[in-house]
Image (cartoon, rainbow, N blue to C red; front, top):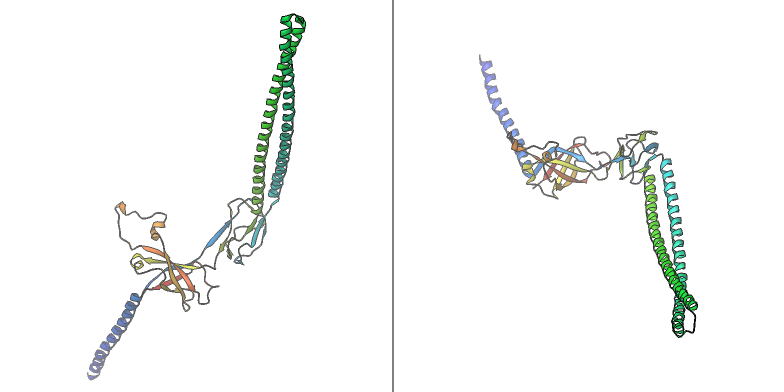
Length: 348
């Protein structure tokens, strides 16, 4: 009977010790977590983000060449894809021919203006001569009127002089009308010049547009990065707006962390951030708080919540916070957008 009693007494002594160790360990862990929460605001609802540039065809055509491989690093301005450009070259030649014709039309219009203006001095000279003739005929008629009253000339002679004066008046009126018509021809020719110049501008715009369309048959990288998500093959017929590939800009990565609204009050731009990636937990990155979103993530959803419907359940909202990465810890070539991370902002 003594053996079981001894074991029981020993067990009764060990249990308090074990319980005490567990309580101390729990208290230590809890205290450490409490102290950590006072110094850091953290969330595991975060991921690496970066600019992804989708590249689409700006003109239609058959794919002639593809000058990249999947996941290839490229630089801004590198030629990545070309389309068949025969149609666009022909359109450019047509536009250039129309421009040449418009230039020729302007030259011809200028010549017409010069020719019309050259007729104006001749018309003025004829009018001056007609005025002189009319003056002479008028003076002759006045003398013959005096001679007729004195009976020095016959009525037939007087009528002939009178007819000559009337003819001079008619001639002057006719020449003045011709001068007006000549001046109108000059105005018409000048307006035709203006119209021809407008046609040149239109033709030049058509040439520029044709050149622009031709340039779109060569697709270049809009930004440096990694080419991904290729959606075309050589010989494939694409139309304007068809997606071709995407470029992931790995040179400007950042973190988007969704903090609870109860945490955001303690955050401000410039605070240091420790970023732990799931794939490289032993190599934390460093960063700093850059900016805050203008609204909660829920407000940007397809169906934002409407608390006025009557079915209200209060849920702690999250606000996206942009964190700039200041130190990649040598992982620049391994970190990719979309990787899950844990962000801890040092608030004290």
